[in-house]
Length: 401
Image (cartoon, rainbow, N blue to C red; front, side, top):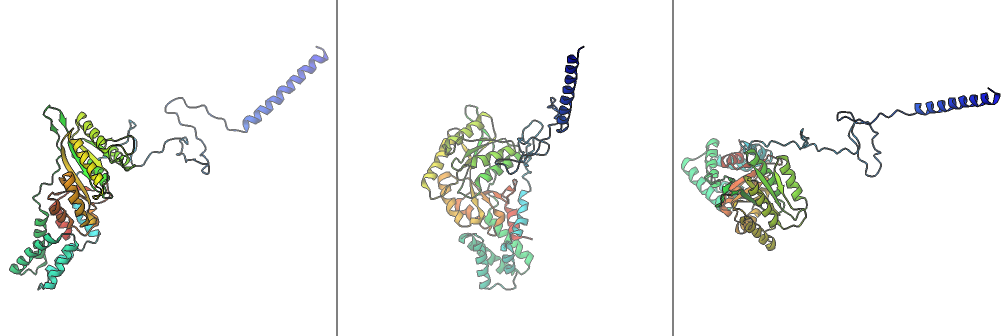
């Protein structure tokens, strides 16, 4: 080989050495990236969390990509990917909570009545005090007069001074006013049409704004599911944007379908009709229809409520019309009860927030006003705090221990 050939060989070797050293240093300055996993059980690569100060940035779960969906705590995914369903609490025994909750609300009703009745000698001032206590409890003038007259007679005959005996007399008279013989059962049994087709029981729920009507419909669905009834919900409150979403959330927690409109302000009667038709097609036991909260002095809205009733009955008869009243409104609720009774044909009353008032006499007053029974009562804010009304447990809760 001549000198020129050797020179080219030496230059080539030097160039290869230099390139090799540069590549080695570059590889040593960064961590090798593993290949993307190909199997379903392969772990996802760890990524740095996004900058919290960047607009729209959301924290990623530990060990998961930043765009992974965040699960809500209320419903963990089941193996099939669907939300885990809740099991509603059994209905029996719910009403027994009322005594403790009324006691925590500081209700003086029973204590005041019993302290007066147990005095050695009842003067006219004492009877006036009893009357005032009963009227403040929203019992109403008529029932108060009846109760006092009965107590006067018994006290005069027996000369009651023993607190235990006074409690017995008062309990008996209060229970008579609450009317334990009224039928408080819900008509939720499906029927068969003359042509042999299935007819679900249809329950229409009405009431003014702010009484907790949509929440009550959701809780009532849980009551029915706890009794092994199949249910469809109708979101006919199309004026409040969040009402259908709220109702759908209640239904999803116990596996109940909600029929709703895709747009706000849709015809409520059409939504109610679709819900009942769905119940017929799917052979559902009960269809619960929620309606918009309506002020009793809004004639147009009340007319619309009448339209909903008429449209529903073209598909299936109404089994129940439940009026939701806030127990804390007292005598003001009686005006609402009168108007709804005339327009909607109310068959039963749901008293919400009964645990938050010392004025339990509203139960008697509203039954007298409408001539229909209180069928359900709200005992608190929990999902299973709706209970069938039990007159004896209610009176015992008012009187306390």
